[in-house]
Length: 136
Image (cartoon, rainbow, N blue to C red; front, side, top):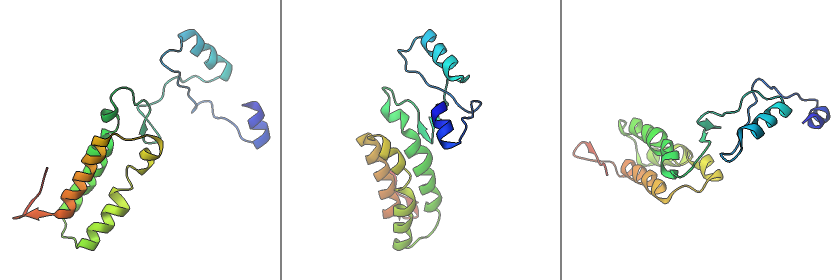
């Protein structure tokens, strides 16, 4: 790390830095690593760069935020507006389908989640009957 800092004339901010050790790493080894690197923080938050830091065994739960929190909330706001087919298409392609793109570049998303997001977008595209929005 010192070689990198000298070569690039950059400095590492140890106050902001943290390490994350795997589950199998013993406390003594992680403590030794922290001491060598002079890093105090050992944990990361639940999300890192907007994605879950640990997917674990509950893959569907780890990516629930994509569907329930982000895509669905966006679509709900759009449902209240009277939009043309072109307007709907632009919102779906430019906004809703872009939301999971970053996560998809790092992880293979579960098929059920992709189908769920697709279903939400289909409901938005096909609209309402008798003043009520179609729901699955």
